Structures are given as C-alpha cells and as structure tokens.
Image (cartoon, rainbow, N blue to C red):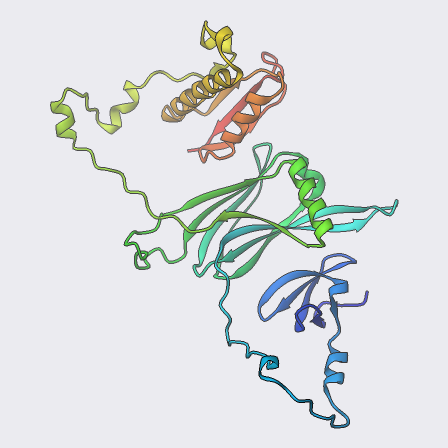
Length: 346
C-alpha cells in the first residue's frame, strides 16, 4: 500500500496538505485538511516532498515582470464557511470482485453539520420497522461525525435512518424573529434499492465519493398552541371532561382492524383506487390513535397481500411513529401474510 495512516499528503486539485486518517479501500483515503475530514481517491493525492523540494531554488531565476491583473489576490484569513443545514452523507466503499467488476461492499454513514449551532442528536436505524442500531451524541458546528457502517446487502431490507435533534444550548436568546426554538426536531431518510443504485451509478459517472440527503436546512421555531378558554366553551354547550377521565369517553379501541375495502363501505365499486387507499389509511389512523389513547400493548392491521401498496403505505407511517416499538409482517395462522402486528411503547 502506497500510503499509511498518519502520512502527510498533498491534495492535487487544491494544492493543500493534509493527513491520512483512514484507508477506506485500495482506491480511496479519508484525509484531514485543517480540521475538515473528507474522502479522496488515491490518484487525487501525492506525497508533498516533491513540492517541498521543488519550492527550494538552487539558483536564483530571473524575476519576470508582473502586471497588476496578474497579481494573485490574497486569501482572506478564516474564509467564510457555507451554512446550508444538517446532512446525512453516504460513502460507498467499493472493491473489485473475482470477475473484475467494481462492487459496493458497505456504506459509511456520516452526520455533517454545516451550521453554526451545536446539536444533541439521537440516531436510530430500522430494518423492516425493527430497530437495529442506535446512538446518542453531540455534533458541533461544521463537524463531520462518523456514525457507523452498513453492509450493502442489508439495504434491500427497507432501511430507515431516523434522527431526533435538540439544541445543545436551549436557553440561547431567541432568533432574530423573536421566536424561541423547538424543543426537538425529528427527521428521517428512507432509501429504496432502485434509488440507491441510481445514486451509486451517478457517483461513478461523476467520479465523486459521496452522496448526501438534507435532514434540515434551518432548525425550526417552537410552535405555540392557542389557549382555549374552557369556560367560554362550556357556556356554548360543549361538554368539558377532566383529562384523567377523558379515556372513558372515547370510542372503544380494537385489537384487530380489517382494512379490506368491502369491510369499510358498501360503495367501494364506485371509488377510484386513490379514494379506496385514502379511506383505508384514514381508518387505520383512527384505530391507531384509539389504540394509543387506550394504552394497548399491540394492534393487528389486516391489509391483505395484493401488490403491497397499502402495506407499504402503513409501514412508511409506522416508521415515523415514536410510540411504535416494532412491527412485523410475517405469517399468521389466521391472516397468512396479509397482516402487520404493531407493538407499542409508552
């Protein structure tokens, strides 16, 4: 191997010197330049010794006449950094198989903070809705934070990369608009195999090392709910219940809900596919929230097999729900593969 961890290298396109932090594979390095780490291909770097040697002049050369337009502009100390949000970055680690084809072995995941604000974050990786990896930490302004590696073969298992951000210093003064910032902010990225393959092919064509997904551009302001005057509502004839007694006034929850359209309406033959799925999802949301309100341990949703449209829509919703501990779509003696069982956490 030409380079080792700790070697000083010269970045050819920018003429800057850096240090090798990691050897990703036989074609790529992770380098650090002035505190910023990023991946580069080996043919984009060289040892700096030739540059240092050639910079030393043995014989004084004739000084060429220099014109005002040719004078190199002085680089401003501490150039302004681009502020464009918080990103999840994927670095495909590639290798050559026994047939000489370039294949992706794994993805290295980095959380990149290109803002001036530090954040606490909680990161979770789910496959098919089941938790697989989690991490809590802090990311500082303009920091590149390594999360972990994911085997490329696992990316066929509906991965969901989920984040919950909060301010490291929540008591900072309000924003320039006079609003306080939100207590926390959730963001997620879901990669479908077809999209992933397209991204990797694009990287190869453009000779780039990484691709990124924006998690948020600006951390949101706190949302204030309007206060409702209970006395005024009662005077208008509305029923007011104590919060502790509210559950007993709710519609009963169900442990199993059947979303087959013929179970929901008699007019389904006149409905379009869009209208059918919309009604099914609306019914699902209703009984999902009733299950939460009644503190149910689990809920079985019968969605059928078909082409999997309704099942996929429900699974996408569940991946974003904090109350969901896990969910599974496996063979059931009563429903076959046409049902998903949801398990809640409180």
